[in-house]
Image (cartoon, rainbow, N blue to C red):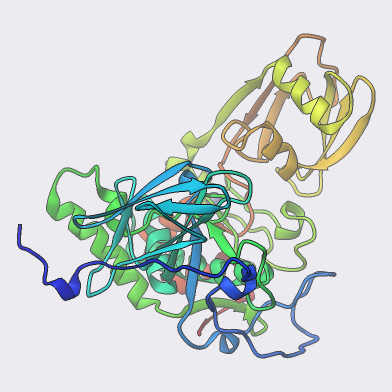
Length: 424
Ligand SMILES: [Zn+2]
């Protein structure tokens, strides 16, 4: 292996901050603050700040990504080339090489510089901070466009993805990131953790680090290179492009498969305010791969008992029934237990029962039927189609439309009617 010139090798900085510094003082300027402005015609939900305008976000933008798999670990081994940094939690600080620090930064410099953890490669730099509860927290600070590459590669099946599909995902991912960071106060204050961050899991967007991580299991090197390059090309083609509604960032949501029709964002995510509305989607047309996305699952009486206790309606679930607000999709659910009943959003029910088990709100049937009694000790079988929350863009439908030579802008206008693609 060729030895890297010293100037391109890892540049490691150990930042020792005074113990009296507040988290705010420790925090680097992650994102350029937006200018203030009032626009009464912009979509706004009660109690929520206005989304930023693209012009508010000019300048380099760095995104802080929380690496969930590292959260709470006692020890992290971070690498760059032959350099290794082992970090352990020690009291309220971090120990490495026999010294204790409040936080640590590991940065790769030079063209193509990267840092790695757990066999995965990342651009930008790592910050290690104490987890608020126990162990460590790993944050990848990375420029916006590199972050978007990692999301496109993390979210899509690269072996079959079409250019327009990759581009639509890039614009959606970029918009989601900026909108979400803004709503979490990235520009208006610093949280106790020191960062306004995004999760690298589907809780926000699946982020895989450098696109090469997503194709590691592909055997042929030319195929690996082609797929990673396709991601890079799509992100470059859409560099700085975001989706806006009346001049402000759109609340972009997306999901794997809607099952044939998407739903209004307001019905899926209560309190979000006006935004994308439900439309027909080709993903359930005869022959589409999504036809196979039908699913069923039977929740056991033990799982239902946990649900009852969590919701405070007793020791067991007596019945579940939807309070329909959207055709085909459960949005509000009445959950009756042996000592009480409660009305909750389907989103919450799905979170409590497990998103991978209750895969979508597009439920075609249950046994016992909705509202009918579940016998003591019995389970609850659910039959559905689609995967994900069903609001905004359907990734399966996007793939099919890209195969029909739709452009990324046309696809986005289909799923987010009334929006415009603009540049930062
Ligand atoms: Zn669909």
